[in-house]
Length: 406
Image: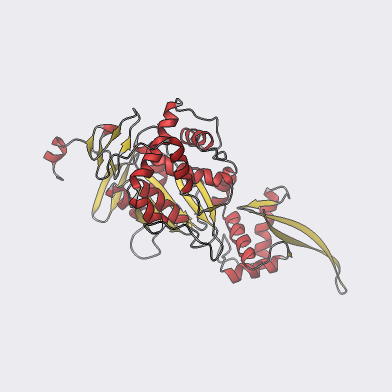
């Protein structure tokens, strides 16, 4: 099939899918080849049943029952991530679709699990990318390999460190085609059909990646929490076994949005406004959930700011060490960071003492905030000056920092 004759005789394939698709004219297409969206080949999946809207609402919100979201708008973003692939596959929105970032406060919180659920609704297993750590290969090469495979979902799993990928930025922003180079392979790939996911406990993004992201934060359930079980096993097994029903529930929501005239809100707090305005209307008016983007600009700014990411890790370490609601010196903060293995951002070869480095980072952050308390992912950090008296040195003032959970 990889010859000139085949390329001339076979119809073009622009996107692959593992499930039926609800197209933007309201029809449902199933397994096989279709002219939809410039060439769609559906490899599996039956036509789903028609699900009443009320049952669809209950079922889709129920998928999120066991997750603890940082804010109501994080829950709205999680719900939007379930609906979004249907809108992309069906060519309902003529705009770029953002990177779905699942961010957690601790390991084993369910961030990747939530994204796997989304893939299962669409009968897919994502092309999973593990960030290279030394050795042969680069992140761009791994992304190129995933793009060449052609499966719709691409997932960067449990990503750590700094995410800086030119090819990924171009693909998400809708450059339409990128040149992919992988091991013994090179190809020009149409990037429009792909759905991007990333899970992390605190990656650092470039400004461009942050602007292309939708960040959904979750918290870890308390030890001993009893997760809901199903006849098929856990939630992932249940969705895989009843995939057609959940896909039908998604289609019911999209049909309701279409019936209403494909309305959109006036939301403007994201660069990808076509996507955000449509999904914002859906989560608020179909599901009666919170606005999609409340607090989101601040999270985008944090992920692109190494100092704020360091402060986020520090606040979570302070919580684990039972050091919340206490006035802490810079030295005490450094001790908490060292016990948690948190590295300083910036120059690793700096000769400044650790408390001085911490003080400089915090000083810049409070300068940027105008001296006001700094909110960071569910915590607030305040700074005060405390007067002390040393018999040998007289009166002195020291800065203290207090971390509180919001």
